Structure formats: C-alpha cells, structure tokens
Length: 470
Image (cartoon, rainbow, N blue to C red; front, side, top):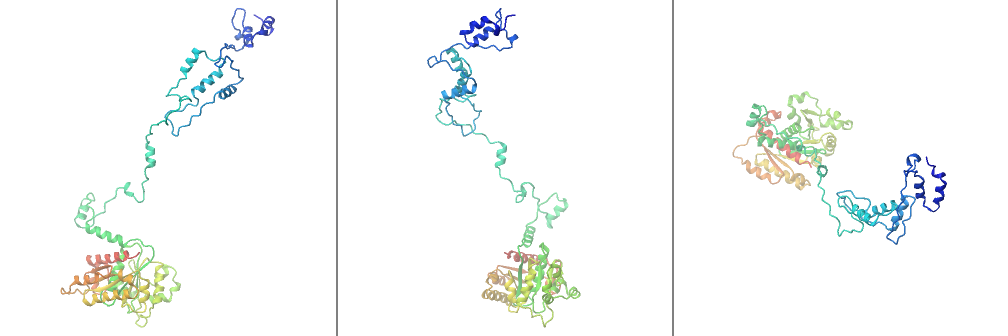
C-alpha cells in the first residue's frame, strides 16, 4: 500500500511549482494509476482547462460562493426591465431571461464553453414561445393581445339579478286559479271535484274587486258623516246597511255613532226593537259623563252595543236632552273612538245646522248625502252640497257620495234617469239603492234578508267610502 500523500517527501518536493488541485490528484493516485477515493474518502477534483475570454484573454476570477458570482454577473451586465402585463397571460411567465440563465451558468462553471460549445449552448437556450419569455433585447412593437376569457357558469349566476321571493312569488309557485262560486262554472267545478276549474265569472270578479276595495288596510282613523236635509229618505238604513257591510269584509270592526238630535233609532234598526229594549240602555250621554274613566277598549265596550261585528253608540232617547249634544262634546267622542277604530260612521240626523253639526263636519273625512227619487228630494240634496261648498267645506262637497234610495217605490211617472243626471255632476259618485222591503219597513236591517241588488249597492257605497280615505 503506498504512503499517504502527506508523508510522501518526494511528492512534496515536486509540488513546489504546481497548482494545488494537480497536487491533490497526483497524491491520490496509486502506483498502478488508479484513484484512491475508495480508501481516502476524498472527492475527486477536476482541474479546469485554461481558456481565453472574449475580453483579451483575462481569466474569469474565481468566486467563493454562488451569491458573489451572481452579483458579479449582474454588475457586469444588468438585466433589462420587462414590464409586467396587465392581464394574466395564457401560460406562466419565466422568472429568468435566457441571457441571465446563460450568465449564471457561465459563472457557476469554472471554465467557459468553447466556440463549438457556445453554439450548442445558444441552441439549448434559444427562445421557445411555449416555454420561455422573449430575450431582453426583444422589444415588441405593441402590447400582446390576449385571448378573451369565456365567462363561466359561476360568473353568469353571480351577475344575474337575484329574484324577489316576496314580490314575485309566481316565479316559484304556480298561481292557483280562484274557485268559481255559483252559476254554470260553479256547478262544473262541484261535479268534477275541482278537476275542471273555469275560473270565476265576470260578475264574481267584480264582486271580488269590491271586497278588496272595502278590506283595504288603512293607516289611521277615518270618519264618514251620513246626512240629509229631509227625513225618511233612507239615511239611517243606509248607515246600518253600509256599517254591516264594512263589518263583513273588513278585518277590523267599524263603529257607528248616533248623533241624531231627534231621538235617533240607529241601534234599533241594527239590533231590532225588542233586543234593544232588553239590553243595557246606555247612550252617548252616559259615555260623555264617564269619558275620563274610559282608557281601554274593554272599558269603552260597556257603553256600546254590538250588531255582529258592527259596534254602535246609541243616541239619546230623552227628548229633553237629545238636542244637548254640542260640537265640543262630539269632538271628544270622536277623539276617543279614533284610538280604537279605523272606520267610524256618524248618523247626523236631519239638517246641517244643529249644535253638533259643526264638530261633525270638522272631523269628517268624507260625506254620504242621502236622497230620494222625488223632485223635492233631489233638490234638497243639491242644496245641501251647495251649502257645504259655500261654508268652507268645498272638499267635502266635491268628494261626497250621493245615495238615492227608492224607499217608497215611486211610480213609473218619475224619471229616475233625469234625477240621477241632475245630481251626478256635483259629487264624486252617485249610487242608487233599489226598493227593498227589508229596508222600507223601518224595522230591523239585516243583510241576509236583503235582495242581491240591495246588497250590491251597499257594497259599492262601502267601497266608495274607503276609496275616499287618503
């Protein structure tokens, strides 16, 4: 086994003028010429061959680390700045330019490539449009055009407007056709068990529209005064019929006040004479006497009467005090009622000049003028509207509803169309109530015994009243 290189005196003498790498390689050789790496564990070192550099033959200085070599390469030739594209390219960009990769390879290798090797190296790092960016010396004439990206399904859903589940329920649930009631359509629906639904007829659609107008939700409390200049022409019966209709279709119960100074019979017409006599005889006078203690609807109910869902305040029956209701007292009643009822009807009695009338007109939101099919009745209704317009109630007169009741079934000699035309131009709406014995006999008024035409007229009046609440 040959001596180690550190103890070989002959090798040390010859190493005086030789480079260190050559000396290590020689020392590690055995006598037979083979390397002794397996025995010494030393990595073989390759001595770089001398070469010439393009700048006059100056050898490339050695660097102790790759960082120093890279810094020297950057100092020798800084990389050109390439502006980043504003849009994302189709293929990932390359962080290093080909020329920079060539310089890094030249610095890391101790010996630069020969001319033949440089040509092969240039071929290896040639610009490839699919894998690398163009060299720094290449300046494009214009910005590269990128292919338009096709929107995905997620983008389309995100940009689509969100449907409104509340205002557009028909987008998600198929609307059910209304059920026909009565007539041929109703019979077919009943015979087929609902399999054939032809929908409501035109008449039923009109009835449903009236019901919708009557049941309209209100914000606040409103009052309608029913008045006339002549008695016995359907004023009280109209108040009861319209009040019962409002109670039938509205979600909140209405209230009717008897402010007739001439011993009004509003409660008798709504309950019947016998039932009213058996009930507690509380009147509007009793309510005024204890109004300070009424602080709830329960307390108020002790002074009211109920005809179904229609709540009533009876008028004073004593002739000595029936005409004592003043405008201030009525306004106190009206203020109390407004806390618990959204719709109130006031039966004013005959005339427009009694004590409480100024308070009634002051708090009224609209008027119902009662008239009859007679020349005198039509003239009195017209006079009432003129009086209102000339005494500061022009809005009430213009928006008034004139109701003509055929109470006495006038003869055919009376021109009803002429009377209606005489009154139609000076009011908001004119409605005719046909002759009906359930109204004409002056007793109890119930909707069940009225003719369909009479009930239809009361529905139209109730809808017109609610339409006037703004």
